[in-house]
Image (cartoon, rainbow over all chains, first blue to last red):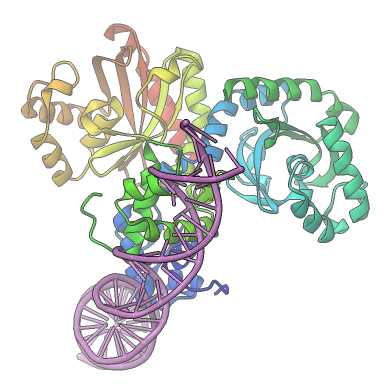
Length: 246
Length: 246
DNA sequence: TGCCATTTTTCCACTGGGTGGAATCAGAGA
DNA sequence: TCTCTGATTCCACCCAGTGGAAAAATGGCA
């Protein structure tokens, strides 16, 4: 479907990516989503079942396999970070009642590595664990954008759409100013009405060499003043995680 | 290196699997581990970087990429189960102080989906999140084996090695008897001195159709009598997770 | 700084694995 | 029983993948 320049690897991951919206797919559905002939799809899918990247149920439908989970646990930016942070996310959530989140930057988007939320509220959020969001749309994203390479910042600022932005960001210039502030204070406080949540705070997680490898953030439905008060606990947690990572 | 029958998909995942023991590998290390010519390795690895399955640092070394994490979160047997179970694992851990674990069966082994442990003890355990263990060596594995297809049970029983087994299992016949008991009681209580942990209990997590999709288990260094007392809480948690999964 | 060893990358001609259209088979409804 | 959709097998073509070899980059070491 997409204009991927051929290559077996690209096709293979094209197949896997086809499961983004559906948990299980039949052969022909899979072929249609990946934009490949059924036959080609069948052959690749069988190989993928062979290596455990796909599983095939008794009904013949495919779904993503456990082997991907095993590999993911070995991805440094995935589970390493997650394991170190989870206890602190738990603690922050219990302490504040807010959604506690850990995210990293992947190109011009953020990927949510982990989130600890109250059980019922979790389903309403569109920001799923493992899911992506544009950088300027989340507190964590802003933190990560602020310390991203210049070319990334430039393209994101250029493509900035004020209509889907945090309160107070009306132009690319606003965004740039905001990023400078974030770099200085190592802190974001942002408000926006989305997903039943009004405000969010974020801080970077710094590697020993001083670069932001991830962002820790809290989201809650509360006025800005109250959200401000969460910052000390958030910053302390970030320091603690950094310590544990060594 | 292993006798994988050629095919680009197999080679590709051979490359990814090479990261099992090392977080990052240079091109030549990667080629050596995967048993492929450097040139072939380079070409494949670049494609993998292109799709996000690998990442390449400034130093030229490769490591597993975030995209695998994103895919893993879509694997039904991975993150779906994990998300539903995590709060209960937390609760069980707090309640009992034991290691609380969730595992599934993959062929003749178990894969640990999630574990909640006290921070310091976690590092000593060889059973890593995302890692594998032979079915008869863990309480969760025994639960899963007890409800596995007959052919799986047969091969595992045939290959059974009493030297690395739970207390009281001295032969394949013992194991088979034990599995029958587990099926009847839907419960495992096992003791073994390993990893500083003396005893474990496990119960199955049943799908709506009644098959065991996962195992919930607790591990702690305590005499068997005390471990027995954990069973009610464990069973209740399993029922609660099953409810949530619907 | 210059030299050597190692690793990474580019180049290229060969060929066999990948391809996909078409035929066949399996299964669910009607 | 017939029909239709989806899954699977078959097979001839051919280009993407291959890997040896050369070139370039890297990194110690003196």
